[in-house]
Length: 388
Image (cartoon, rainbow, N blue to C red; front, side, top):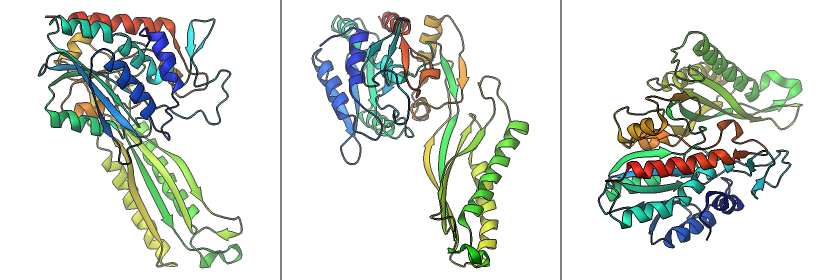
């Protein structure tokens, strides 16, 4: 198998690992690649066995590990106007490498795999003071759903994790904090009626709209008066409604409406205070609805939760990153990564990887070849830091 970063990236992009599909072909390909260097992998599966996380360790048994972590799933290309085949690596005249997942985040995974020969050689010579772990997860793009099982397996196995580098695209600049994210599903049940008899019905869409307006008012209040942290690109807690479904015909009072809203909060904030406000407002609306339709209901269900993240300045991974990047800190971002879950489990993290987050999820997604090289070089320098 090839082991240079570009060739490995081409192999990884050929696997359509859109979150709605299985990632097993990619995982099994990586497992075989690692086995070629004598590295065993442990897989942890989802409930139906159609997806898996992979974890592999390089180094002496019991050594504390620096984990290099990436997710294998990508977002859909549906409805996007691609000028190049999304699941084939394409070279541009501008030094860009195009393909879905090139930036987010198969570029990082390719660099890690390309450095495996170096990691293995250092381990074989007994030179590593700390081992190196490779962690690949599923379903990050739909709410960091897979990595929890990988983390549970690490804890069960008693692995000593000294630090974790989450290789999301940061243009090789450290991210030391990010917001948490939660998604909620709201189901509004009213009563159907002929539209000429609207007082006999309870319009689920209109009551959902009132709830959505309340969510918007909460978001506006956070933007105007909420706590701020200047470290972040969006320095306050945000809320927004992303999906709405309801109604079957214009001349029928709709009995059902469902919508989803999200909250992205700063570390130290509590999103429950905002969700409780939505729930309290829903309870008031429900009293009004049940005056006409006793069967009316409003149900708010949690759908996705990933905690906020702040790195520990004293952690080993933070010190390695500071030394290699020539900086003491880093930035905070509004997007969310698996670092929140690793950190919550007691595994210190920094987010750093090749490519720009601005290219993630877009048509003609790309990573600059120079970023791939920079990450490859950086991982080599990290390995040298781990030498006894």
